Image (cartoon, rainbow, N blue to C red; front, side, top):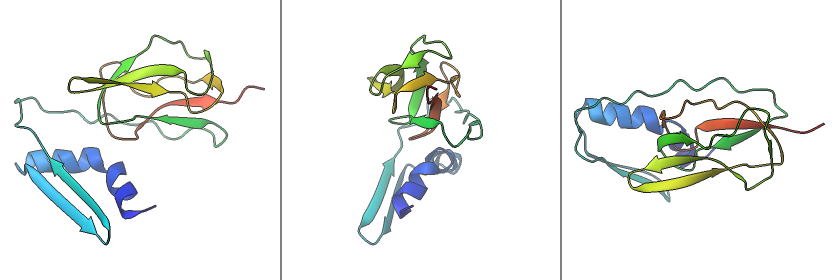
Length: 132
């Protein structure tokens, strides 16, 4: 993994620490890679970082969150057959509603985050199990 990939995996924890210590802007640089974060003023609510379930079997394909925000279910049931690119949920990031799309053909596993749960960038929201 690269420096930025490692940081992005730890983004929810990093943002939580920034809020805890009232840090509003952070810029991290490692060679040619740079990550700059600017946080909006806190609304007085504390964010709960969801527990992400442990990875399922290796043959399943993860469906990551496209952005950090609030997960919204698309109403698809577990064991629903999906095709690569099909919308399986949404992530709300401010005024944006970003689609979460299936990353492979197969059968949709259960949502790993509840509807309305806060998610980080590339948190695994579902797993797709191969058919057969």
